[in-house]
Amino acid sequence: MLSYQHSYHAGNPADLHKHLVLAGLLSLLTRKARGISYLETHAGRGLYDLGTPEALKTGEALEGIQALILPDCPLATALAHTRTRHGSNAYPGSPLIAQTLLRPQDQLHLMELHPAEYRGLRLNLRAENTAIHKRDGYEGVLALSPPKPRKGLVLVDPSYEVKTEYIQAAEFTRQLMAKWPEATVLLWYPLLPAARHVELIDNLKLPYFRHEVSFALKDGQGMTGSGLLLVNAPYGAEKAFKKAVELARPLLRA
Image 1 (cartoon, one colour):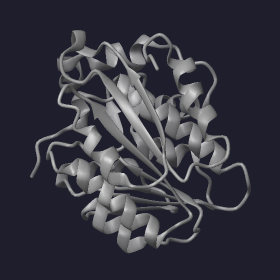
Image 2 (cartoon, helix red, strand yellow; image 1 turned 135 degrees about the vertical axis):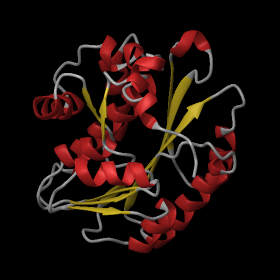
Image 3 (tube, helix red, strand yellow; image 1 turned 60 degrees about the vertical axis):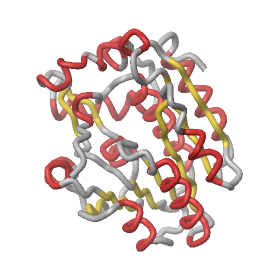
Image 4 (cartoon, one colour; image 1 turned 180 degrees about the vertical axis):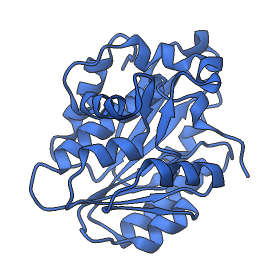
């Protein structure tokens, strides 16, 4: 079992980038009354406490969400809802952001293989329209595709602990689009000195919109930025990326 635990990194600048864009895209996709499907390959536990020893050890949230007062926006709505229910140190992961912003007619399918994270996800995201699956995320999403409703968004957000996962994420996305051409796919990747994200981009072989931001996390040690690739972008998606930088300025620099 891999060792990555997002509780050490929740609410950091990369989360801000990813979650601001995700919330904006969900807002776009739910403009019409028809339901959508939302799927994740690597869901995590869905809810994090920024006051835990794990979060305080890295201090990454202090350089992210805790250094920012969010104006009115979809992520601010999800954050306020989460903190009303779970306290002022609570931070929603992407599954909880999606569950909070989506509607009863929308369907969520969340994949998580890590036993502890899976248990936390089941505890934190109980709802009739949410199915939680203890299975490999790539295999699970492909098996469920195309879902009903057919309009929808897939978030691909692995830890990239295994170096080959950059290529694996690209191959998965190509297979997914072949099975479910209506899907919108959002892929997150870290910007690291080794620049392995180039393998993801080179192997994707699909039209995409690319958005990258930089930040000064840990005085420039380790991750120096965050990247997102959007495949099959809905109309108006570019505004969601631009808005994310505006909302998180000066923490995120495009």
